[in-house]
Image (cartoon, rainbow, N blue to C red; front, side):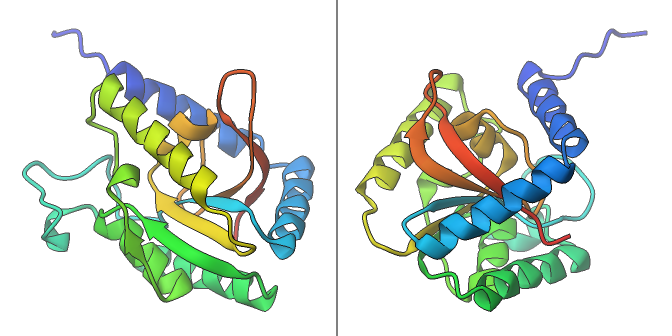
Length: 199
């Protein structure tokens, strides 16, 4: 029997996701309160992993960005989840000045359903199949763009687990958001104020 091994990046991201699921505790609820409070003050960065999808990892072979039907898509539950996330922002009167999204349809649809608008950004396209050099360049581009975003409102980025982990070192559930302080830790990762979940 052949010795099958998962790619090391996939193993890392699955491990981080498992840790995220395990740590959703009373402390996580406190994180949510801190995150909402920071967003009400404004000037924060929000990283959102696209909402729940049909089952699978990555995309079918031969998918194209121009054809949503060729990609892994949001499930009906994921579309409802994205709408609930947007409603949670509106009910708290959170000011969102810009909504950036990966060009993958599950991300842009999440952004559109939640916030009613979206600006596609190549730098937050999935880096799942990128080389380490390309993934690092995307992280640098995002860091620069975040640093140049100086409005009083909040900036939302809807992207993929792999990109979020590259920026923060953390795993997320689908549809979960991380609110960033804009500061970096000793490893150069963005410091996370708290997590937001609508489920």
